[in-house]
Structure formats: C-alpha cells, structure tokens
Image (tube, rainbow, N blue to C red; front, side, top):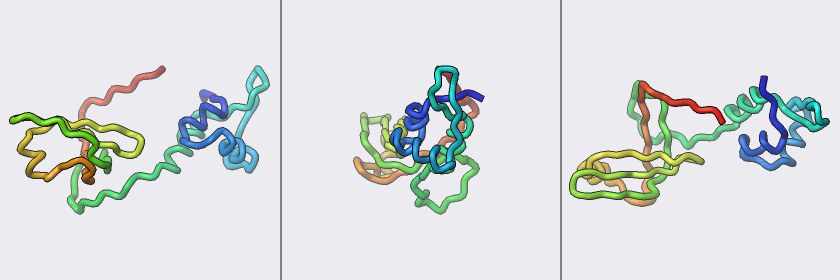
Length: 130
C-alpha cells in the first residue's frame, strides 16, 4: 500500500497536521516509520477515513433517479446568452460546471446563491495519477 506523510494525509482529510498526529497518538489512525525515520500512514487507511468523514449536504429533492452521483451545492456563477448557459455550482470543496439551455436556467429559476443539485450520469470517468 502507498504510504504518505502526516502532513499530506492532513491535506486529503481537510484537517491540520496536529489533528492527524492526535489521531495517530489515540490509535484512530495507524502510523509506521519510513526509511528516513518519519511517521507515515497507509494511503488506503487515509482514503477510508476520508470517506467515513465526508459530509455531503442532504439532497433536498425527493425525486428517485438511477444516477448515484448527486452533488448539492450553491450556484456561484451563471453565464448566459440567448440560447445557452454555463452554470457553476460550489458543492462542498468541488466546483461543478454544467452547460444547459438558457431556457432551462429560467425554468429552474436558477440565480446566484440558489441551492441546486448537480446530477451526474456518465459512461466515461477519467482517473489520473500525479
């Protein structure tokens, strides 16, 4: 399993280095020592902890959908012409951009600061590594 330093784990978990150290000290997160004598944690354990601690905003809609990727957020920008619009949402730490008709923006009554749910159903997901 890949290992990461405590500071790197803190970045992925959205907490301070000190919080990760406290978790290690309390046994909530196991740590080892790398060849240079630095404390490191298992990348998979960090991923599981990040998943466990993730807090998404509850989806306010009651519509049933087959799409499982739903991101609740706030509208942060709308660029619109007579036919098309680009709508940006801030969904937690993620920026989601949608292209739709200007008519759809008006029908949904989207405006800056309004709550919206981005529903993503895609057959292609690209995964990259650093």
